[in-house]
Image (cartoon, rainbow, N blue to C red; front, side):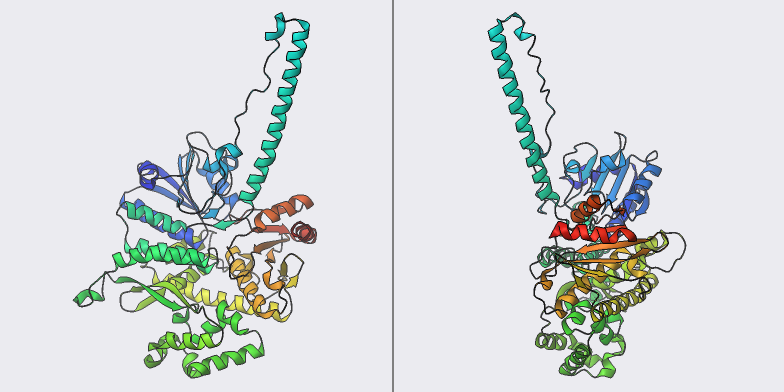
Length: 566
């Protein structure tokens, strides 16, 4: 059931209860969790936080805690499946689901008692109507025998014939209704996509309750930027949501310039700006950032000798000396940095990079530390998917969550260092895949598989890193191929998951086109291909388009996928 008043139907209900928070492993979920934790702290709400990275962990966490808790808050998980069927809860258990995954399962939408959905109502949800999906079981077997006991034989026969015709009509109507229901559900559930960021939904709640702080606003910005960095939403949706947040930023960070305290506002200041679409450039060298940002790398084709020449020409066109470009951004000459954005943008237009400037926000902590929202996203993802083992599984989640607080700048800087390694690894893998022609056209989609023993292959056994790699690879492939048909194809990417268990992780990415609506059909296609071939697959991720598969079942699974999508 959709909640129309978040404060009354959600927050006021749980504020006096013990609550279990189940939080998915993505940056938007972490940001939504931080906002909710801050609200809970204001009102002294007792809660327990459990990170969940997939359906199995969600079920385990529920089973472990269902006796102590009656109120469960699920962040970025649970909306796109029938929760009650999966978890089989008692009738006095309530679930509040704040999830950006779409489409939302229809049983969750029409359950009025136990499942409450915290969803922005202006998202185009297109949920089928109740009568199209659910039908009250009517007792079709009407006992007409008793009525006809005292009738003449001819009258009896006529009544019997009418009864048979009526039953036949009812059965036919039911078959037609079921066929229409299957069709409606197929159309509704065919594509997977994302709605408004969960962090923005939680910030709205804080704002309605007049408890919104600058920190919460920053987390909402990071949640939205995570959706943009990971290509989960359209450019139109991103710009619209940026506009909404910009009004809040003006409200929270407004100071007259002539006031003495114009610089030090509580040592934290958020600013809207048109920034360069270059990853981590303020914490790296400009040269490294240009080489390791997917947009510039793909546009200049940096994996080729010709591409490297174009990069030198690009830098020469801006009039930037190599010595300046290759040193840390902070150490560059002030005279160069002042007009840097304009210089880069002017030259980028000549080299066909017309979208190098994007609308975003930056944050200043005091006078020294400045970060853009995408810097925080890259750092948090890297901390969360760090492959160096340091204690239990949840350590990375807690570190990533902590790095979002302004008191933990050391963890944030550690995340930025890991993010640079991750971006380098992605770019090198993209270059080797394209140079060795590992991307193959399979007919209805492109396919690429990383072999065991490839450098950094362990990093790509993690879902977010593999998705980033797949998106960067598809972007680069579209720029490098001369085949017009291949430019319009989606990509399926596989990487070794667990060598001992003999599994691979596979992800499907929609086509890289200007007008792309970011809707992904691979979730349903993977399910059907696995069912038709009895492949041993594990659909454990909250994103349906990511699956785990036994290595020896891979070829029959791909054959089924090809015939299904042809």
